[in-house]
Image (tube, rainbow, N blue to C red; front, side):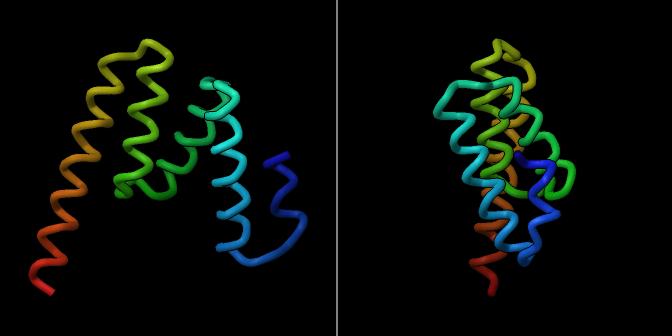
Length: 90
């Protein structure tokens, strides 16, 4: 499904929304290996997004990859704190 998404057209935001819906469906269906594949691609494109890191942490945890889960969780926390500091200065 997802590889054909770009041939359908639409804006980047629309394609991103469909990808998020697909990701949510994978998580709800507990297809963690496929979830990890999608999340790692999203992370490669948008590495500084806390929610992606939190989703990676949860997925790694479900797959028993505790060290990776811890690293992603720590990064999510650091990114969230960094964004909060920026918001306070604006």
